[in-house]
Length: 141
Image (cartoon, rainbow, N blue to C red; front, side, top):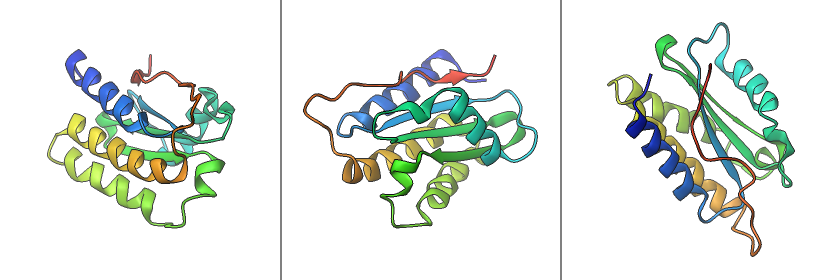
């Protein structure tokens, strides 16, 4: 698993990515992923109640480094706004290119940054924005 300073770096990338958007990004690190990472990400997304954001604008970056699996799952509010159907796969491919070099932290931060860029255009920061979801990396127990 990742070291504290690596987790802090990812949390900071989330904070920066969310600084200009009302959307929410979370990173979840699983010890193991059996089956499809996208299906598992969907389940985790709902278990974490990420579908409860006011604008339905949460994004979960799910990864299981030990199984070499990852997925990005976005709520319906975001999917209704993003026209580029390849965006999520391109973002995932960017992350995976770092993961293959064992640069997990860098890959996650690059993915978070890319997601943040598109969220800024779809969900600009609101005047009275409240950070609805914690920015800390979630590690599966």
